[in-house]
Length: 171
Image 1 (cartoon, rainbow, N blue to C red):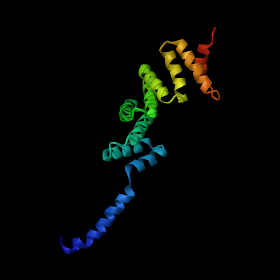
Image 2 (image 1 turned 120 degrees about the horizontal axis):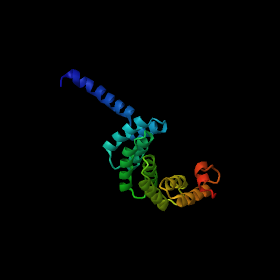
Image 3 (image 1 turned 60 degrees about the vertical axis):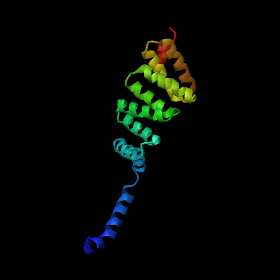
Image 4 (image 1 turned 90 degrees about the horizontal axis):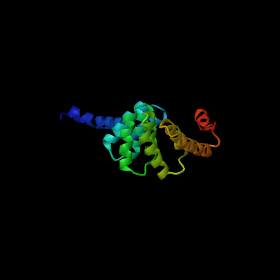
């Protein structure tokens, strides 16, 4: 190196340090974008974070949420499935994967994930209403009405689907 380049070396090093400090951790930046509802941006940042450290199950979960929020349900299912493999007690990943299967009208897989969610977290109330709908769609009106009764019990302060409630009323 010549003397001019050596003279610039400390300034270049400082510039590199400053750029690194400004860009920050992609996981942190991803969470900021996620909290701002910028799911496409957050997903890209979460992918970058996972390239740096693929053991971050927490980041993988939020990548799945971003995919789900963009209606990329098949992609989200794959991501949540990996989260579940990495942490078999990840009830939120099971719940969200169930929601993705529900959105794709794969009632059997959605129901399986919702049931497993309830096994892991019995007080997870949000599964009862979709279970009732799926049972109805699957042609099992009695099971749908039983699930609807469970939903009405746990959601006493909220309205339950009126059309399904009417379908469960005896003639």
